[in-house]
Length: 206
Image 1: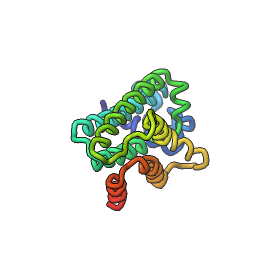
Image 2: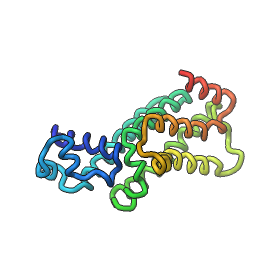
Image 3: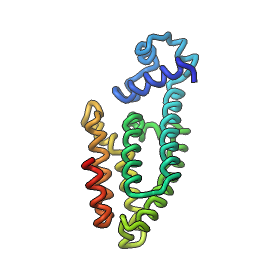
């Protein structure tokens, strides 16, 4: 990717995160980095092309992180580190999650990719869950399908927490990133056994 194209994407990401997707025009991006409108449209003819490129960047980062994680032994400690890394990436591309409903309604390619992404994540969740149950960190289901419902809860927290916060906040800050992570960990905490809970608490004290 050439330097100008990368500058456009970096500027768009920062502005979308700070001001929201709908508030940032292509002209605003050109003003931010000091290039002509024609230069921008040479690289990205429409705003949708910028948005798609950033969504592709997000999915690539997430996929690479998941690939590294699944290539190692799945332990509770490594799982907790993986979740920390996940929320760093979510915060980096937070405009996606602040406007996820809008994006999936108005960008057909994002809608299709997101649906596939959710399925892949559930498969990864099930694999992690099986390993942690085998290791004795997580208790077994108390009723059939219990962890399917747990996944749905975690999915909503992971993907829609920031849009909920954004309703009453003018800006999403590092504070909300930390709260997002903590809400997620509080949601999974009850399903761990005594040793697993102790390890989670120890992780938070690091």
